[in-house]
Amino acid sequence: MQKVVADFTVTANIALNSGCHALVLQSSGELLPILPGQFVNVEIPGNKEVFLRRPFSVYEVDDASCSLTLLVKILGRGSATLARVAAGEKLSLVYPLGKGFTMPAPGDRVLAVGGGSGVAPLLFLARRAALPPDSIHLLLGAKTEADHIDVQKYTDCATFYFTTEDGSQGVKGMVTDHPLFGKLSRYNKIYACGPLAMMKAAAAGAVEKGIFCEVSLENLMACGFGVCLCCVEPTVKGNLCVCSEGPVFNINDLTW
Image 1 (cartoon, helix red, strand yellow):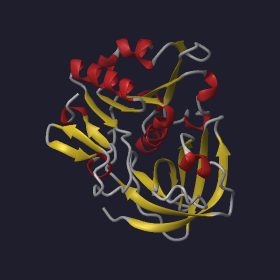
Image 2 (cartoon, one colour):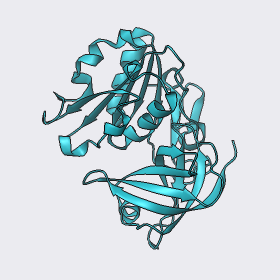
Image 3 (cartoon, helix red, strand yellow):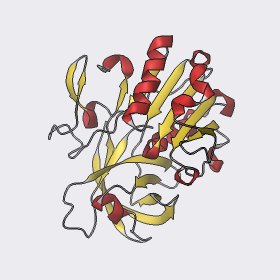
Image 4 (cartoon, one colour):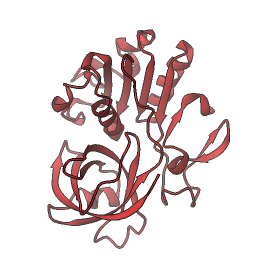
C-alpha cells in the first residue's frame, strides 16, 4: 500500500475530555485510502525536544472533504504539544501506516472492546462497517465517566455499553465485569484495542469460544516502517514489528 509524507492543515482542535483531543486535519490534495486500524506518524511542530514522529490512531475519515480526524490522548511532551495546536497550523503526516482490521461482513455479529485511545479505531471500524447498529456492540471501559468521550454521533452505526471503575457510568468495574463478557457466544467477530490486560482478556474469551478475534497493539513505535525495531512483538511467526506487520493481529498469530 502506498505511503506518503504530506502536509495537512488543522481545521479544528476539539477537546473531547480533560485528556483527549480530536484534531481535524484537511489534506492539501487527494486523501489516500485509510483502513480502520491503520495509523499515521505526526511530526511534532515547534518542539525541538521531540524529534521523533508520534503515532496516532485515525478516528474519522471524510473522503468527500479529503479530511481525517486523529484522537490525541495526552501522555507526554509530544501529545501535549499536539493538543495545543490551533486551526490554521500545518502538520506533517506519514500515512497510511500499518495493517488494519479485517472488516465485518453483512450478517456478522460484532463485539468491539475498547479503552483509552483504543476507542478511536473501533469507532472508525463501526462507521465503515455500515452494519445495523444492533449488529455491532461497542463495549468501552474507563476509570470514570469523565474519561469516556461522547459517542452520540455514532449511535446510528453501533450499540454502546460502558463500564467505569468507580461506577459513575454503566457497569462498575472493568470491561470484563460487564454481562456481555458472559455472552460472547452470541458474536462471531471480536475486536479489541486498549490496555494490554483488557485485550488479553478479550482474546482469552474469544479463544475459549472459538471466535474470530483481532487486536490492535499499542507497542511503543518510532519509525513506522519496521526499521528501528523498537516495537517488536513475539508471534508464532517470530518477532514482528507492530508498526509494519500490525498494529492489528489475529490472536491466533500472537503468543499470548
